[in-house]
Length: 274
Image 1 (spheres, rainbow, N blue to C red):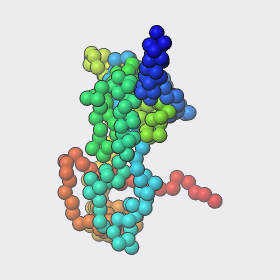
Image 2: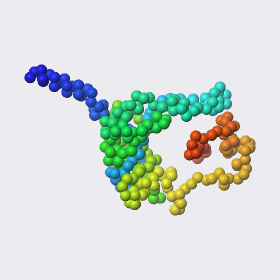
Image 3: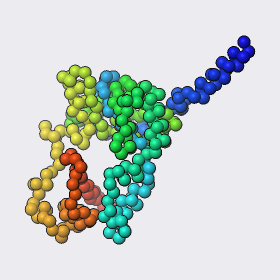
């Protein structure tokens, strides 16, 4: 009897030692929204059966060097000027460690997300899987609601969410969550007005309508011939492709996919400082 009791005690101790870390790890708030625009109103609780495309953004390596690395290939005085990186080199340089990927996957597995449901992005920076609202709310200890904009657009978000303390250091951001920049893919009856609204997306920057029409950026075809001129004389005032070719030392390129594109953002001062 004594030997059996000792063996049982040892077994219990070993069982605790080898149990999943997520069962013992303290939960911590990873993100919390402190402000919501007055133009957004919480309308209703999101249905439990809505399918959410979950995206876990991993902590990447070498992010603190990104300015240095960009300038190394784009500054005219750099010996590596114009030696642009391949997609594989970019992925290898900034990809999270395999240890980080394994830690987050192990946590998700312990929460019931089977390995075959999980996909790692090509850049290895995102862990992706689809799950119902009810499952995500359990995993992240949160609640999702539908928010309605004054223009009629809808968005899905939560106020905050938690993760186990031992995986917090490996995760940068989770979408959709507190940010207003994600879609949901509803399941069930597509004719439902609620499901149609969600299926059409909820991100304000792409789905808000103005005067009954969806807002679109201006087309360059509407610009004057002078702006589309190949001359480089006005590059200090407006940027055209030839300015970029001269600035970044590339003459021509081919795209790997017809869906590829590039965008240019220029910020102008909104006010003056004394």
